Image (cartoon, rainbow, N blue to C red; front, side, top):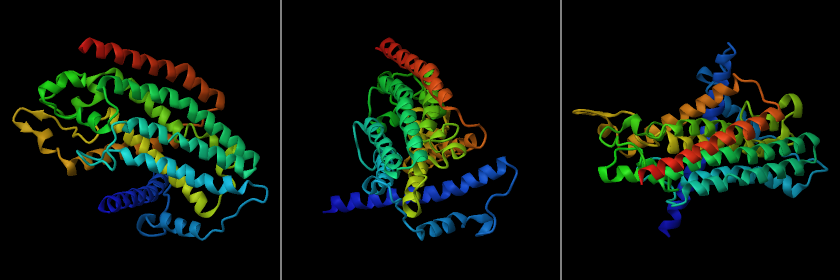
Amino acid sequence: MNFYFTYFFIAVGLFGFSALFALFGVYAERKVSAFIQDRLGPTETGKFGTLQTFADILKMLQKELIIPAAADKLLFIMAPAIIFIAVYLGFAALPWGPGLVPTKLNLGLYYIFAIISIETLGILMAGWGSNNKYSILGAMRSAAQIISYEIPAGFALVSVVMIAQTLNLQDIAAQQGILSPEKVKFAGFWDVSSTGGIFAWNIFRAPHLLIAFIIYFIASLAESNRAPFDIPEAESELVAGFHTEYTGLRFALVFLAEYSMMFLVSMVGVILFLGAWNTPLPNIGSVQLANWTTGAAWGVLWIAVKTLTLVGIQMWIRWTLPRFRVDQLMALCWKVLTPLAFACMLISGIWRIGLM
């Protein structure tokens, strides 16, 4: 019985975190966009406008749940829930610190990559079920974009997996900390076990993984439908794309999924490339900075800071770069990112063989 209660509280906690992050993310994005556009953003509701997002949520929850007369009601109603649940379930395998993971899975990375792919199904259901030309066009664009960019993203992640020799995210994270000498060769990197810190991160131990990380980050923007890859909901062309007909709580679920996806893909990138919950501070002689800033509490702090930094970069990019055309988006994926990601995977294979 305690087993079920434990997982119930973990599930509720993760949902609460997703909701709070979405509130924080919307407010932060408003302020970031205001700063970039030389204006103030929310200022009136609460100190510095901090309660504006809460007010918007309360207003949204009171909105009528409208279903278009010609819509496929079952698909229309189920789509927002499927979109959010697909992203929400991905949090189950994310490690937050040494031993702090909701569900211990040996195939954690594979599970996340598989479960978030279901989001595409929900988006297609939303577009088709709305019976709206803008919605179906946005859904088709989104499906084509997500499926295409999963290829370079997958190759980039496999580049790490080939060197780490595991799909367990906890193990991949642990390999980027201070390793015992007998584990260094197994980890497939240079011997930096004595110093730890930033030089123990994957992008420094195996330098070609820096390119793989850049490829993954670009592909993650497309996976999240974030600018400059936000053509599925291009307001200037498609009104709002696949969620044009949604109101109230259903509309809120779609945006909750988007911000949760931003955090999820950023955290996966941090775990695989940027040292996960390991400290960026190295041991220097008798000054054992890495040892002093390692542990469960420190791990949560480091992974949160790194992940939120990537989320901030996603917001910065949205308000800096113009939107791609469809042909430009596909050309970037198939002609640039996919060959480069495949080359990184090939280099990882050679790298691993060289260490055997």
